Image 1 (cartoon, rainbow, N blue to C red):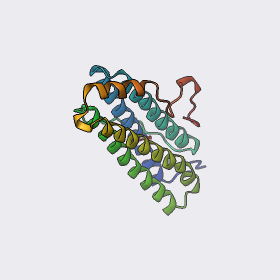
Image 2 (spheres, rainbow, N blue to C red):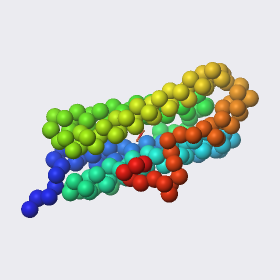
Image 3 (cartoon, rainbow, N blue to C red):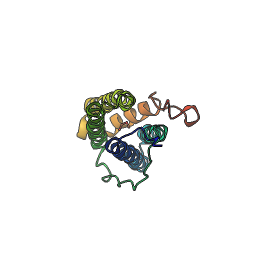
Image 4 (tube, helix red, strand yellow):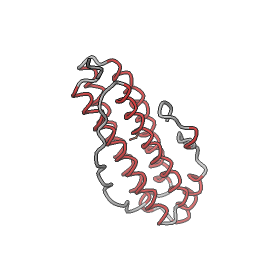
Length: 183
Ligand code: OFO
């Protein structure tokens, strides 16, 4: 008896998206390490928390594939594209990475619509909302950096921004509070 409730196309696309979320986590991780090395501990903290969020997204997809009786395929995660050149550039890269991921999420929504796979369509709506929030987060950061001077931001302005970010609440919660249903 076939208990797999996902089509081959949907299951492949979900597996690819799962790896993409892991890739997004590696990107945040590499930028966080760059920020820590550059002395921006507040920014580093913020980015480390987001790396964890992306990993939770990966797990959320993994669990969904299993729940639907399909096969999970764990693949190699592509390396991040290198260190940012500045704080401004760091958040430009974050924004671009989020927009790229949104594009892929939308493709999956379209695919589930075309196949009339309403369970997957419904599952993907959480990601649509999440991407909107993350794009907004990156956009707000870029605006703050712009006010501080953008690429020409002075050290004292970046120092204040870094301090602010250390205490900025965001969606990320403590690892022990997080479940894959509620990342
Ligand atoms: Fe996975 O939420 Fe952003 O990319």
